[in-house]
Picture 1: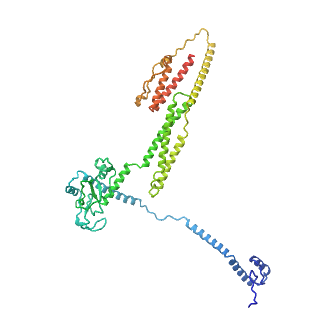
Picture 2: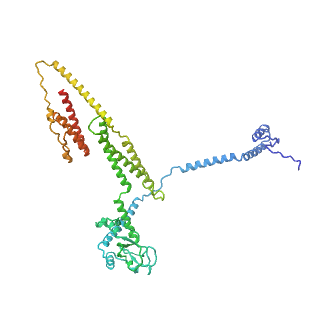
Picture 3: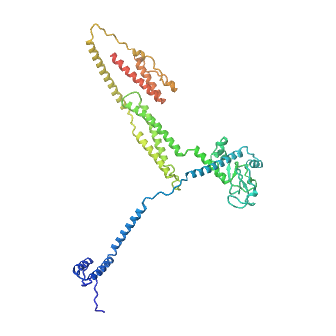
Length: 499
């Protein structure tokens, strides 16, 4: 046995030759032993194939499994996404509305009945315990004690330590643990829309307590009467208190606006005010940039400061709206919902767009030195224009005189417009309609005002414009500015004619 030799490797099964690799073994077998018996060759090829798969650690087999899995998943994918026919449908909307309407009507009728009884109970309630008890029993029939052996709330039997108590609104029986107490101030708040009685304007009425009152278990306290040192109250069952609390929430939702709505309305007020002031501010700045004297630099600077404060308020309120509820309720999970956060973000984004498009691009007014330079340049331009128009008028007059016969004498022109403007200008026409009229303005031109009545009239109109602008009467300002412009044109025409 020791002389037997064992060979290992890629041996040819016919010539027992070691070829080193399986590829060389296959090639050698196909080339050198192709003429052998076909059955032997087939069996050897099957053996080599199995050995090849085993040596390659079933790589080809795993690939086949992957192909099979891919085909299976593709079939499942096509099966899942095939269109399906719609099955039988049935609408439950009408049934839902009918059931909801019945339930809402039942809750509303029960709540209204409780509120009516509550108003009668707290109106002219006797202070004496016995009389008050009789008064309550006369308004609301109480259930007999013998008819109820167990408490409806906790299902415990009544005994000496667990006595029976009646609800003052429905007359039901419950134990002391299952009963609740309603403060008179909170009751007046609930019945105010029905009975018309005024709500107490105290902090106690605004924050009325609805929690159970602590009792000592004495005989006098079991009757649920007003103690000499405590506030008046009524004993109620849990069902009645649930209905009253629901009505209280409805009243609060109807009368009280959420804090985000209040902040948004305030922000919209600032934005609307800014939208009304921005055109006026731009008009005033353009007038100063052109060197006109219709507006003063102090008025423009004051209006710019006001617009800056409005922009700061809009930015501050929008920031508060954006983070509303995220700081206090972020840790305990009671913060705003995702839709509420989205709404707050949209409000903040809208405010940012408003500030960027309307407030950040406002033109700055010129400085005092620049304003003086602009006004001087405008005066020079006006003088040059007057000189050019005078020269053109003289040239036209010279050409006309050359073509006029000598016998025709030119009559002097009498300035009729000066007498028309000698009187003080009337008040704005819209003053009678709106109830606003300017005060009398005294011109400070002195003796020159007598010589130039139209200049005096223009100064008076400028005073009216300042008064109307201070009173925020934009319609009157526009009308007076139009009159001033006409007077300037007329004065310029008369000056050219006289020259």
